[in-house]
Image 1 (cartoon, rainbow, N blue to C red):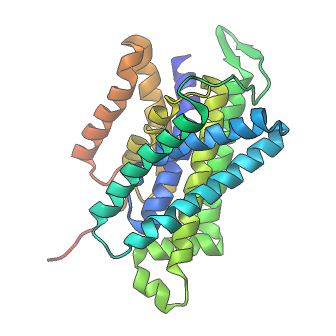
Image 2 (image 1 turned 180 degrees about the vertical axis):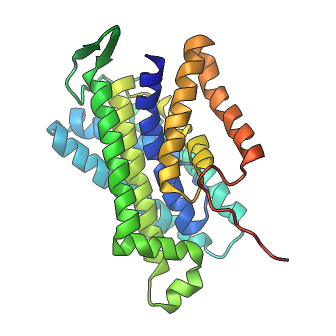
Length: 285
């Protein structure tokens, strides 16, 4: 049961980590605001579903569209102005962005958990001694489906191929007539989409609360373990982190799950600094 629960949560972690990887591949920026983009996207879905009263599907579409627009707006207003500046400046801005997003959520919706929203049918399925909820199963399937769609977009579409090229060098892509700024804007928008979908799935199963941002931060070790340059590695890293968190929480205690994930991250970095599927770059000096 712990393994199945971990796999279901891990698929969501992998989806959020995929957004983390897309931003890094296009701009070499570590987006530490990804967990808080998840929080903001989840609360936007709750707003459209409960406050506005939209049907479930329309509320999801509206939240995902807002997530894309929010990610693109973040890039346009903050990161774009720092192009050419030291990388530490961009990373610092993403940390400050996380605080801004959390503050906005607290000011608009308060600090208490929101009313529960059943995004998916609430029933149970019994497999032998195991009892699974349809919510968890649907969330697991949708997380893998969304991740697969983003990977296909990245691997086989024209914009996706341009994003891969931008990761290799901005000047080269500009010389080929490709707008680097547009590609960076799209990559941040897609990161917002991945975070929003992950937030909707987490909120529908665990509830809409501020603690979702800390759960979303588990995407960071998932991305590093899988490899910062591998979208597929982000998914596998998410599944691994989900398993570790679930098993350690089940046998040791709930408080030990998240620290255990970061301990595994440290151990992995000591053995494979580029992650299991990352590209090892050799620089000549």
